[in-house]
Image (cartoon, rainbow, N blue to C red; front, side, top):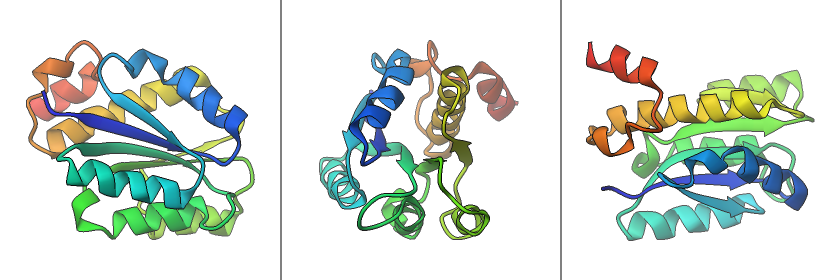
Length: 157
């Protein structure tokens, strides 16, 4: 089975812990990593790619020291190695302009305002991971127990 990774980025440890807790049902199927900065996330992505692993999903806060979440997700979207990586912006402080930039430049798939609903974040992650598996042409069967069945049925028909 291919190694699929989820990377969660937030400079606040308590927020990062909450995201990891909300995504914990995915732990048996995907490797969930946490990073406290955009640069740390990019470094991890380089390492995972060098090891032949896939970065399926990046969930990032927006307001962070150094690079913002929009800058991080834009950089990811411009890297051909991560052309199919799904991107989510999770923030409580993005302006309308930031949101537009995230959609237009970073091509995010989803946007969540803090506080978010755990079930909605998990459902969105499952759906995006399912889309990623199909976009990459991977065998979806090893992940059938966790993938979003409605996406599977739509992609198979």
